[in-house]
Amino acid sequence: MITTTPAMAPAAHPVAVAAAQAVKPVKRVSSAGLMDGGREMEIEHGGRVYRLRITQLNKLILTA
Image 1 (cartoon, rainbow, N blue to C red):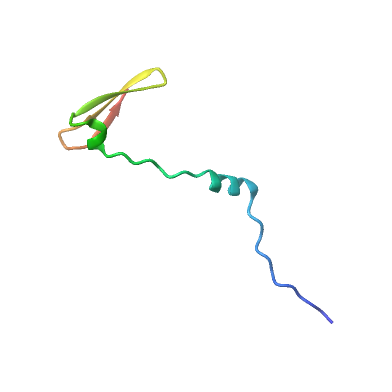
Image 2: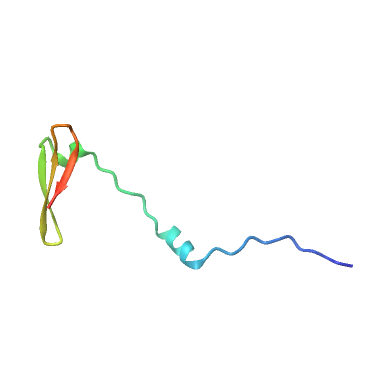
């Protein structure tokens, strides 16, 4: 007599499980709130200053 057992799903890879648990939702900020009514701002990051500005075509540009 041959007996069979139901097939089991393969175990998830430990790295994939850890990565899935570490995922945090992406923070969203409105450009209007960030710019606070202005058209450009400076952002300091890693010892450098970047300029974020709104163009005439209402696009965002970040420059170093």
